[in-house]
Each structure stands twice: as structure tokens, then as C-alpha cells.
Length: 225
Image (cartoon, rainbow, N blue to C red):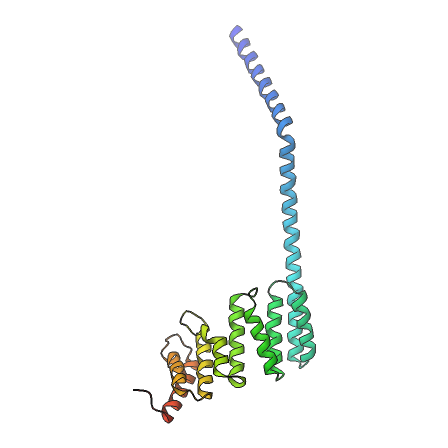
């Protein structure tokens, strides 16, 4: 009986000690634990709120972009350009850049080649714009310059994109070939069109056009031996 009483007494003492330790620990760390819990809750709520806010802004910008493109399809070019200009300044996410690109295309459709070339060139030089969009802008400027500029101007826009590593190389090579052909530089034109026909990854329609140009060049000139 004495041993059982001692065991019971020891357990009670241990429980009291654990309770006292827990109380001291809570007094010491309780405020920190509560603060961390509050921060977690606030952080989660803030993230959800920010996520909703960004989604809402992106959705609104998307709606404005679609509305502007509809104006363009309906022939309301000036209204579309105005809407795209506002979106460029006030839009969210990728839409300001897309608005700039679409506006430049509309300027070209209006017949203002110089204005469109300047707009595409500005996009191509803007380091804040994603590289793929910059490359597309250079290609668009280059193609406009085929009919409105010199071979050297076309080359300044697209020659760097004609290397095998670039996805837009076929468009760049075709623009360079046409510009050289128009300038009477037949050997240079032949080189660019041959690069297209010899590229296994060239789309069939582009390769066919290049072969037609090669046949035309070969019919009127002789390749260097």
C-alpha cells in the first residue's frame, strides 16, 4: 500500500510539474504563437484578396481589348486606336503590350506605313516588352520596309532573327530575300531563299514561295561558279 501511495504521489507531482512547465512556456511563448497564427490568417486572406484583385483587373483589361478589336473589325479604326491607346496606359498584365502591337497593325491597315514602322520599331526596342513580342514587332517592321524602305533597313530589323536558333527565321529570311530581290541584289536574294528551301523545318507554303523565287532568279541570272 505504501508503494502504491508513493507511486500515486510521484505521478501527481510529475503532473503538477508538467502543468507548471506548460504554464510558464505559454506565458513566455503564448503571445508569439498567437501573433504567428494571426499573421498566417491575415497573410492567407491578403493573398486571396490580391489574387481576386489581379484576376479582376486582368479580366477587365481583356474585355477592353476584345471591345477594341471589335471596333477595328467594324471599321471604326479611329475609335479602336483610341481604345487601344487608353488600354496601353491603364491596362493590366500583358494587355498594354498587346494593345500597342494591335494599334501598330491598325496604323498599317490605315495605309500609314511610316507610322506603323515607327510603332513596331519602338516596340522592338523596348526592353520592358517580352522578347517574343519584340521579335514579332521587328518582323512586322521588316515586312513593311520591304515595300517602303531599303534592303539595309530591312536587314537592320530582321537579319539577327534569321539564324537557325530563331523560331521566326523563315519570315526573316523571306523578308530579306524579297528586299534583296527588289534592290536588284540577285545573288544575295538567292542565298536567302536557298536557306529557306534547305531548312527541313520550313513550312511548306514558305518553302514553295522561296522555290518560286529561286526559279525566277535562276531563269534570269546565272549563279556564280
